Image (cartoon, rainbow, N blue to C red):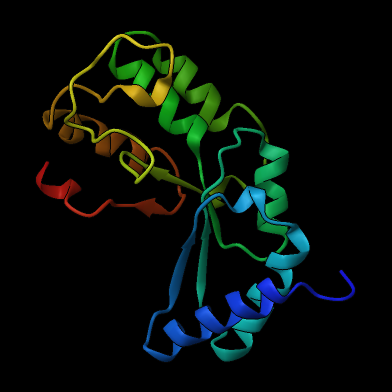
Length: 172
């Protein structure tokens, strides 16, 4: 990108502002909609200020190649939507333990330890939300707050990936 878009310098100024206040990690929503070159530059700039700064990409993609591309430009982790959706299907009786294992470990992917696991995010219904019939997977919750007690060990201990805990999740 020559000339570099002004948006990049503005985003870097925002990152620098928050890093100046001690923030050492950023969740970047819809990261897959931003050019990879922008992320390379922005993450490099942030790491020049703090080499330990942590970046998590939120991407709507379930394509491992797209997730791996985000990791390749410097993200430390990417949300693993495929794992979340299959776990929801499993809990609701529409999948098997084998299908969940296939999603989680079916592909020999060296980036798998960077696929962040979660039970709740800003983009999904809360775990305790009722199950409602809908063709859209995000339109339904798991059905109860007790689902978290049953699913957290599966989602968080089934692999060695980062874990995302949504604010308030621990109390349902």
